[in-house]
Each structure stands twice: as C-alpha cells, then as structure tokens.
Image (cartoon, rainbow, N blue to C red; front, top):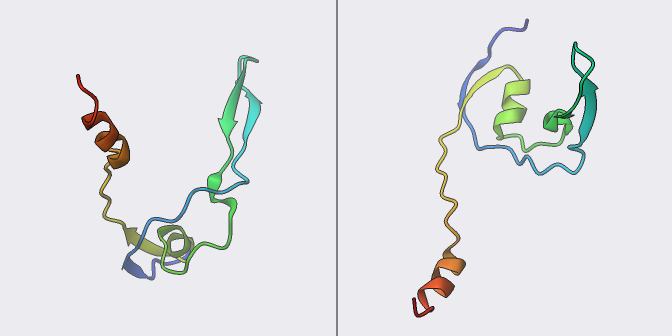
Amino acid sequence: MDEVKGVKIAKQANFNQPRTIFGPILNPFGAEYYWQEDPLINDDYDKDSDIHLLRNNYITITPCYINFTHGESMDILREIKW
C-alpha cells in the first residue's frame, strides 16, 4: 500500500457515468441477483474531485449538503386551490 500523501478538501466527483451497468451474479447458493458494476471506472475525473484525489493517495473530506426539494414543483403546487 502506498503512503498517504495528505488530507485534501475536495468536491464530490460526478457519478453520472454512462458505463455504469448492472450485471447478473450468482450467489454461493446458485441464486441469480443483479449487482451494479463499479461506477468509478472512469479515469477522467476533475483533478480536484474526491475520487481523483483518493486514487492518488490522499484522504479526502467532502462537506455535503443535500436538499432534494424541487423548487419549480413547489411553486406550481402553491398555485393549486387545495
């Protein structure tokens, strides 16, 4: 294992890779199930992204803020006479 080079604050890499596919796999009992192949197969991530830095032996810290509220739909729904 290579030595850790340091700690970096990094943006989250874009995971919307077109090569992400699902494939059938057999478990130890012979039952088939589907598994998502590694979405990290792309090699052209931005140089300041978490995946690129992790692959280059840095520890990464990526602060995340998640808000799935769809503002446009909120505006449309507010116009309905409930």
